Length: 148
Length: 148
DNA sequence: CTATTTTCTATTGATATCAATATATATAGT
DNA sequence: ACTATATATATTGATATCAATAGAAAATAG
Image (cartoon, rainbow over the protein chains, first blue to last red):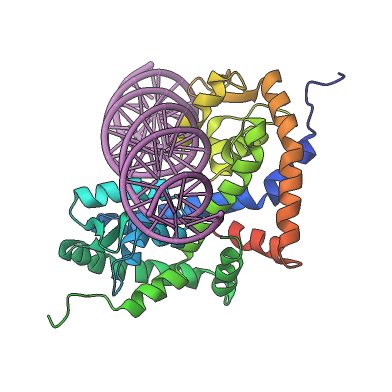
């Protein structure tokens, strides 16, 4: 070996600049911080907000479909529900039509928390979209959807 | 109150379909799983691969700039380095020019692991790009970069 | 109708993520 | 030089993430 560097620096730069996974992780972290900061006064993180919002349905959904909707592992959902149950914002109860499963539902207090958080999401999201060039937000949503 | 649902279901659908943060988290999770699965035989996660690749430089970088490059909190970087140090793949040593700081460097063994992982990244990324419509990957990179 | 397979969820263990906080050193102001 | 401020990193505690695994019930095969 003539050199201790077995991977050219140019390759490192290529990976850094082209890796879609890295780009997605970076953007996800940055947006998470943005919304976490904004939602903090409401007592929610971005993930908790998305999860609780997805439970605002006519009928209480089972866990599997909710995990799929959020593109998260089912065990992640089980874990993510714990602090929300502990705070009395979400109820997990047996599915009478499938004894293996559980259904998820916002409590009245959870609905109040979510209702208080909604205007924060709206203003934060509006500001974010405004900061992007016209049309980029919609295009980005479609491109991201193709990955999940 | 005429109804226990204080947020219209249509609003839930709107948030679900338009939230850029949620879209980013979903895509990030999906891509993380894709690359984690592919890189598993190499003993690396997607994040560890990105971190180690970012250390392949002519000069060992300090922690701050590496955290910024990856758009992660500095405390996250400190934590993420732990398993890599434990495995002897990354060295953290004092910065002789700033006694507050530390510099990061791949070990020879770390370089071997990274070198073995590189072709996996290349084939996985090539397959991913191929699965996207022509031009979407580059556009997506640019759009994501604007967020981080 | 029984046996096998599949589906739904929980638990454990490892790592990732960040806020709050603390410490040490460097830098700037006077 | 002295003091105040800023910077670089570490630690703690809470939550998020997933693999591996396990248990129970439903669906399917025979």
